[in-house]
Structure formats: C-alpha cells, structure tokens
Length: 397
Ligand SMILES: Cc1ncc(COP(=O)(O)O)c(C=O)c1O
Image 1 (cartoon, helix red, strand yellow):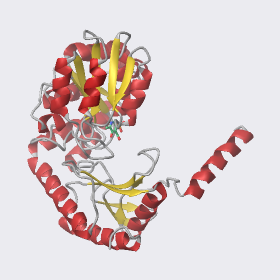
Image 2 (tube, helix red, strand yellow; image 1 turned 30 degrees about the vertical axis):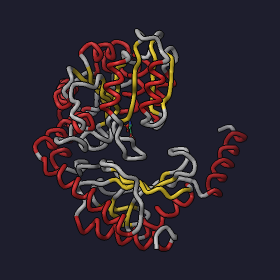
Image 3 (tube, helix red, strand yellow; image 1 turned 90 degrees about the horizontal axis):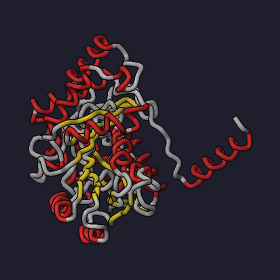
Image 4 (tube, helix red, strand yellow; image 1 turned 180 degrees about the vertical axis):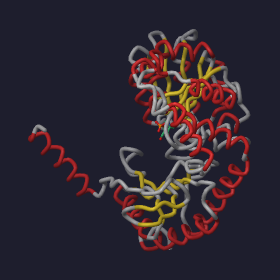
C-alpha cells in the first residue's frame, strides 16, 4: 500500500473516532432471529434487522437453501446471458411477478444492483427521471448514472413540487417518477395515489422501490401498492429479497414483459455480473410461499409494531409517526445516537443509531425495526431498557 495514502486514510478514521461518529461493526455468531449472540455483548434482543417476518432462520427457508446448494451447486460461475440462468431463477421470477401482479420480473444480486441496473437503462436521452429527495442511496446512485436523462429531485413527498417539476417538462416527454414505497429512515409511506394520478396526467412512468414494504405492508403483505389498493397501477416495482423475503440477499425489478426483456438485453449488471446464487433463489422462493401460507406472521408483526410504539410513547419518547415496521426516534447528533445505541446494547438490546451521511446532519436517530419473531416478553424487556437508557441520557424524564 502507498504509505502516504494509507496514513491519510488513518488520519481520516481518527477524525471520525474523535467526533464519536465512527461506526463499529458488531459480530454475530448465531442466525438472525429475535435474539442473536454477539461477540461484543452476548445474548441480545434484535430491534435492528429487516427480518420483519422472522423468515431469515425459518426452517423451510433454510432447508430450501440447503436443497438448492445440493441440487445446483454453488452457482453458475457466469453471467445470466452466457450460461448463468437456472430454472430456479425463472421459477422465482414467475413467483415474484405473480405475487406483485406484474407481467414479469427479473432478479439481481441485490436491490442495489436492481436500482442501478434499471434507472440508467431506461433513463435515456429525451427522458426525465424525477426522484424524491429522501429516496434510498441506490436510487440516488441509479439517477446519477442516468447521465443521458434530464434529472430532477422533488422535495420529500411534496406533490405540489413534483407536479411543478412535471409541468416544467415537455408534455410528450417520458417522465420516470421514482420513489421508495416505505422510506427507510423515516418509516413513512410514499403518497402513491397522488403519484399515480400525476403520472397519468403528465405522461409519467412510476417506479416504486418497495424494499421495506414487500412482505410488510398491504392486507396480504404484497407491499405499499397493495396497502393503497393500487395493484396493477404502478408501472415498475423494485425490491429486495434481503429483508422480509428471507433476508439473504438479492433484488428484483417487476414490470411489463417488454421492460423485463429490455433489462435482459441492456441492463449492465445483467450483462456483466453473475446471477443470484441458486441457494438464495431457493430460499427466497420458500420465503414467499411461507408468507402466502402464514398470514399470522404479518398479523403478529403488526401487533408488535402497535405494542412497541405505544410503549415508547408511554415512556415519553416521540417516535416518528407511520404505519410501517420502522419506528425512528430522532435524537439529534450522530455521536448521541451512537452513544444511545451502545448504552442499549449494554442492556441487551441491539438497535442501531443512524447519523450523517445516512440521514441529514442534526437528525440522527435510533431506528427500531419490528419483527414478528419478537415475543411480548422480548418487547417488554426492550422497553425497560429504552426507559432506563432514555432517562440516563436525559431524553425522557
Ligand atoms: C429502499 C431500499 N432500496 C434498496 C436497498 C438495497 O437493498 P439490497 O440490500 O438488496 O441491495 C435498501 C436496503 O437498505 C433499501 O432500504
């Protein structure tokens, strides 16, 4: 390593440590579930995972992955169009499309790859991409990569601002409107009914990344689009298999057959990067089946959200409002959020503090994520810890 550059990196890291904003990785030795064993803290209740339905360690999901490994081996050692497409990829993609009510779907190794593979492929010259300012980083980067398109950003969920941006563009121009379904740091939902109506009025194509909504929102867990009764009315849906749907990794784009075929032909991660590992595809398929067959997972997850929100409020915290499984408590400075997260871990509760640059400066937060895997006893213990730490740090009385 170039010594001068290495010294510079170390100096930069020391600055983060001095500011109290250095992120320390936690090391886990057991499967992701309601509790994990951590090298740093022993047994801990997990309030920090996207394992919303507790499927990451579900026996059927795990068994499907093992079976997939035996049946298909580790992978294809190839990209999709050379010799990387397995029958399990097609089965999973058909399942995702049927689950979301689209003509087709295509998988990627992550939703990051899906968003950055989709947006620059369709955001070509003569089109515009208009993005909510609080969209996930993968959407932001996807928009940055769409260098041929006109790129605009509207204020968070501000439909008047979105409409002004749409109206400023030529009427016949294709305008991609892209939004998270559930905003990952706030837990609020995109205003999808208004978004869809504006798209119809201004020749818009709607893209919704429902990574935090799939498996969580809607009567049957089909996501934020189902929640609003808009099934079939959003043009393009992206999402992850790395949260509610098994939690391993993987992402997808779902939409019309022509869109999916276009991505097979042109999307750069499809052309130049290996396919989703077979084991992961098998586990994700089993996770969707498990969700369809066990609506009680969704019901208990929602009961847990309501119970924990009410408990936090009773203690004196003011979590941001929202119907999703994400419950953020704004604490201000990044160093404070990290300090609070460390103090909670000492009490056996694993919940991460988020600060700049993940969220805007001054709005650092503790983000609770609720899972159906958690028992009432876990939640009560976690609330006791929140009460103790909140009082010690002067956040509540
Ligand atoms: C809204 C959203 N989109 C995309 C991603 C990226 O998903 P993946 O981990 O599959 O790349 C995330 C993950 O945090 C997310 O919250």
